[in-house]
Length: 365
Image (tube, rainbow, N blue to C red; front, side, top):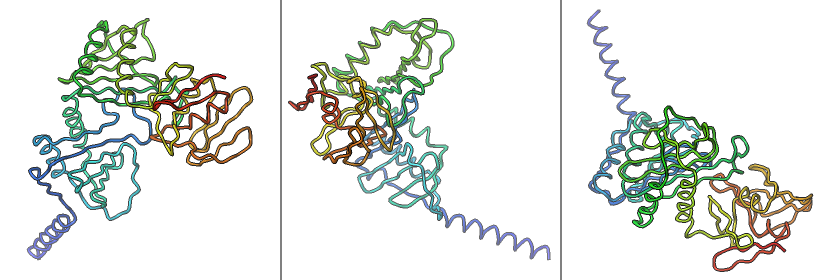
């Protein structure tokens, strides 16, 4: 009897193991056959964490050793088919595309992976090390700057926030100018560290794995603070502002420019063209024109001296002082930012607007 029970238990264990093996599915990608791999991480909820060194990654490689590292990560992931239909959060998805024939989309919060249209579970424990290595591949080839400004803590919220951008350059002249600007900043060691709670900050990651994180929203005992390669320093704000202005000029050199009375308006999230109309961030244009702006995903409301202009995101209509009328291009929510037609806003509040040489000129009447 004991022998029968033992044999039965062994057969049961073998059956369970076979069932488990049958449920697993591995993907064997041949690194030597890869020509190009693209990796992209997008914060499509519009709210990156201040101080993050990996706000928005877009990286393409044809380097054999780098592609082998990426492929090894894919081939060793613990991917198990999930028969239950899950609705994954799309916050910060990571997309790995190989030669436009293989695509893996990692949904980090829920540990789900969409591979070529099918859902699987993946091993989240290996994710951080993988992304850190990809980030290392990228910054060793140039300089990456991530800028974030949420306004005063608690004042702005998506989609009405000042915005953020990431700029990456391998241009030799730009790299030299940025490094010179950093060297001009006066740093002094500070004991301890500091915490952030919103506001303005930007991170600069330089070749050879050097990184400086400036926090520009508060001071301690009259000192502006930053982290440089993990150590805390105070710094001179004037030189730091020169650095931020330099990076902004590089970042926006190919963007549409908007001028108010011949002074350029600074948009961290650059203007875009939709249906031959220039759209700009609502919060920025309101600040430039001295308007009050409020709202969210349902409506964007501009006010001044009793005049009210309301846009409904996604709809080609505008409500002017309670009177609704159609327009050819309305407000859009893009990457979590409310983008509004600059001509319509400016003209409604009494400005003249003209388009010339890929630029918008707003002038007071």
